[in-house]
Amino acid sequence: MKHGYSGDQLQVFKKANIFYIRKIYKNKARAQISIFKQSSFTRITSGNYQMTAVPILGYLNIDDKIGIEMPYISGEAGSDLMLSGYIDVPKSLKELLGMYLSSILDKSDIKTMDAKPGLKKIEHIKSTTPLVWHKYLDKGKEFFIKEINKKDVPYPSGVCHGDLTLSNILYKNGCFYLIDFIPSTYESVLSDIVKLEQDLTFGWSSRNCAREVACDLALFSRSATPEVINLIKSHNRMAFDAIEILNWLRIIPYIIDEKTEKFVTKTLDQIFSSK
Ligand SMILES: Nc1ncnc2c1ncn2[C@@H]1O[C@H](COP(=O)(O)OP(=O)(O)OP(=O)(O)O)[C@@H](O)[C@H]1O
Ligand SMILES: [Mg+2]
Image (tube, helix red, strand yellow):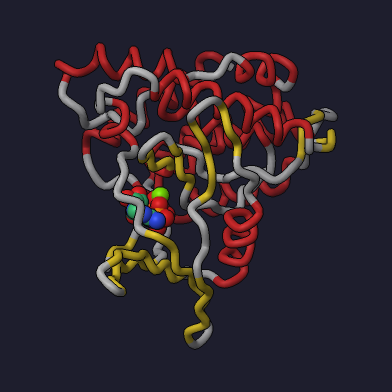
């Protein structure tokens, strides 16, 4: 059994010699949204490659908790995928991610961004983290108050994956399987772009990799980044900045090692200096 950062429980089990995964969610209301997103994902195809959600094979109700059963995908994810050496994979991933982001953008409605959920989230993080982090949390609050609360900031609102990092994309035999769908503070294509950039621009999944492979990682990231990202960002600059700030502040409570602490500090400094 494994507990992820989220506190959800993951178990591998075997039936008739085939491996499966059981995921039991910590929070029922959040689970319902996650399961809805995973079950309603529309498969995307480009040439011989596909992107799909891992299919849900069964639903569980255990006491007050809910869960799902799905196939065990013995594929590669995160930095393993980046270093796998497949030639076509980053190119296909770029194509499929571009198609995915465009499709959720098409299904979005333009709404005015509400600063309250972001401010509430930051306050919550502040109440649970050591003082050293408060200067960043205060800067984040200031951004939300000045740029979002006092202005009418439009953003594309619509269902997104919620945690679209490379570690939640499993690759096997020409198919990219998405796992770990979650509710997002701001349901928007912008939230998925922020998460993708967390890996492809800032190198989150590969932060613990050896220096010798930095070149391969950079090449993968450049080759896998869809062009549509820049277009969507440039049309929604202020909302994107707010969601990006919130994303990095949200990582703070999960920092348990020094390397990650340095990585997050450097990224937050970089982000705030560019706003
Ligand atoms: N269907 C699957 N097939 C193979 N591996 C899986 C599958 N689902 C989950 N995993 C593995 O379990 C890990 C954790 O699963 P998941 O991301 O859904 O949970 P989580 O609680 O959000 O964990 P984390 O916080 O680490 O992301 C994944 O990164 C992946 O390695
Ligand atoms: Mg995950």
